[in-house]
Image (cartoon, rainbow, N blue to C red; front, side, top):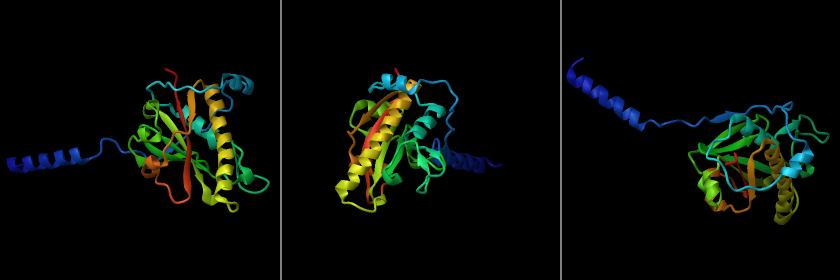
Length: 220
């Protein structure tokens, strides 16, 4: 190959290497199924150990803990309900299931898809600093953001819809607390979220309201 042609080829390859992203985020993260036979605490012992912690190790959650905490929050545990639809780990009035769960990690913002039991990428990149006001939020490996889809309620005023969503959200949050107590993870629930800061990262449509966050990670 002539010297000038070789130089042009090398220059072209260099441009490609520079312009290519360092790592592409997967469009979906397939989660592991919970191990129902794994040793763990009794419900009473988990209740005894349940507490809020605001210090987290600088270490990403492994796939098992990530998968199980999301399943505990809103996974499917029954394929058929008497009134139709599927059943979830957390109860929901009239089985409306208005709460959507987003996972904010070092790699991106994902939406939890309960039927597929997977995380679907919404926005790539590290947006943890937008998930809350406290310093630990930006450093913790996982922030769950709970969003109420008020469009799913077919009756009642806005205040009624928000109240119903808040009740459902309380069940979800406590599920996460109990799982974390059983698994030895640190966790804290937070209302210190600013919907405006999250709007671009979550890509929310009209009628969807961020209501609360929950920060999760390993003990320091």
